[in-house]
Length: 166
Image (cartoon, rainbow, N blue to C red):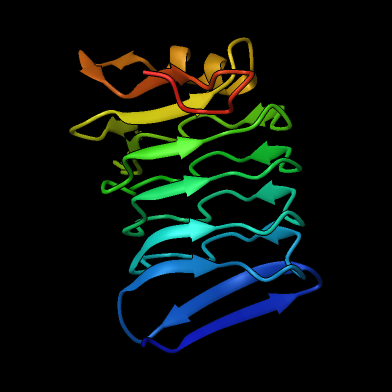
């Protein structure tokens, strides 16, 4: 089993370290925010956030190998570039509690070109599971097509069963 280290400062997870690939990471209850580049280039499969998390900061998972994440109720903000460069990301479940999703938060590589920059979509779309009419649906639909590539795909979570619809 891979050793995992969480560095938490004033409720913000500022750094995650592991000596090898970790199939599932469970965020401790003391964490209120996933900080800037906390999972930068982390070798992880699935991240399970605690219910205490309210914010996923800018570039929190930048260039990590994350495949799947389910955002718990209570998270309110997913900032710009939060999942940038996460090309293995296949799906993200976002609750109605999320009221703000920053530009290019899901489905883009973060590339900087001088003298200008331009976000580039992943080669395959990220499936966003959420309720109809939510901020997550707005985000998915705004990012459905960019540069003739499918960036995100929205799939509704059924109200009664909370199951992911197709």
